[in-house]
Image (cartoon, rainbow, N blue to C red; front, top):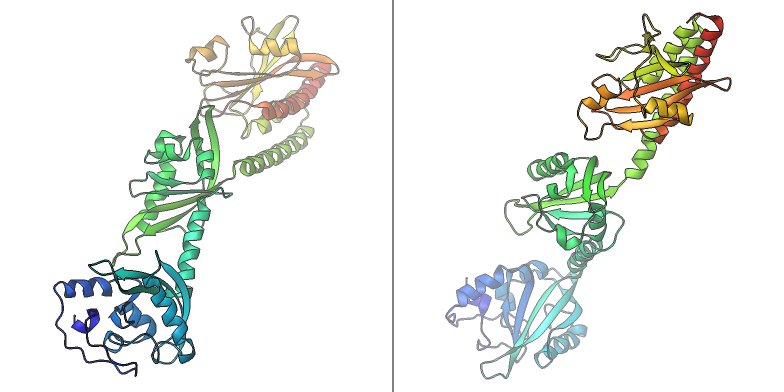
Amino acid sequence: MTASRSETASAPVPDGSGAGPANTAAPEPGGDLLAALLDGMDAALCAFDADGVVTHWNREAERILGWAAEEAVGRRGFAGWAVRPADADEVQGRLMAAMDAPGRQVHEFALLRRDGGRVLVRTQSAGVRGADGSPAGVYCAFSEVHAQIDLERSIALSEALFEDVSWGVVLVDVDLRPTVVNAYAARALGTGRATLLGRPLGELIVQGVEDLEGALQHVLSEGAPASPAEVWVTLRTAEGERRRCWRSGFLRLSSPLAEEPVPLGVGWLFQDVTDARLAEQDADRLRFRSNQLHRASRAAAECEDPMEAATSHLDYALAGFADHALVDLAVGERLVRAAATPAGAPGPAAPVAGGGIPVRYPAGHPALQAMDRIGSVRDSAGGADESWAAERQWPPDAAHALCVVLRSRGRTLGVLTFLRGPSRPAFERPDAAYAESVAGRVAGALDLAQVLGTM
């Protein structure tokens, strides 16, 4: 580095003619280090001594204005080279005023490039004190206004994202631990913003954390996916477990200061779309079940045997709904098994061969409750063992049950029971409404079979 890049205020001062000086002063101790530090700055920087003579000029200043350090150091002010003559006094006065003012002064000036073009810059100026505390000059850092505005926009965007916006924003480090969390994300995760920091996601997410962490790890190694992804998770909250669907986008964060891309972590943006997805699932389920009822009615209409029509209704109802179905008819005070699906594996419903033997349901059995209430009864094993199904005279793989009463012409004909295995969710109220629709059709067919005496 030449001495002209870090000239001190004691260098010979030329007149204001605009011609660059020929400096011969030897560099001060540490001058090479100071010049290297100044040239390595991202911001343009120049300095003036107490007389307004340029003493320092770094590479960023050269890049913005086109004037080399050899051409800038030693000039008095910007007049005649870096600013229009009409603006020279005002610019010089405002810059040098920072020498006696406290703190930093911020101004915007239109400066001249070496090629004659003009560039609007934003400056931050502050006074420099000598060893005795007296004013010794001014340093001025400046950047192009559009670059500064871009930086301010980026900062404003970052701050806005972490305010109370309508989507969650979480920054995770390379260890997949949250480092910054906005208010929306904290509410979605059911905890406080500070509580999340540094904690593994698995402490809050009971199910689905593997998918989420897999997506974050993929972004770290391969980059962001082309489109948002929807992730279903089950959260552990103070109110219990909640299942949620998050529509998520991911951004790999890399350091802008490193020569090679160094991953800093992942920006995870998401919205809770659970309600919308559940509504879509409900609509799809309702559409499918309505279609099944329609198909079952058409198939049953072609059956000569009413009992065959009843089992046909059951076969269509089981698709996507349950694993097993049982039909128990009321014979006096007892229930007799009339039709059932195979106990060992899913299969079509069929009349029970050699029927007429009463089923041994204990008191309080869900099927008996349905008879008493003339309504539907739901039951689940919960944490019970395999004896739960055996005690109720159901197939051993049953874990959830729905019993609905069979009614026709104002009479109770029996009970229809749907059973699900442990891999399926428990029956809910919409399931009971669908089962009652099926039971009405099955009861009509069974009533006809009794009238015709074909059972």
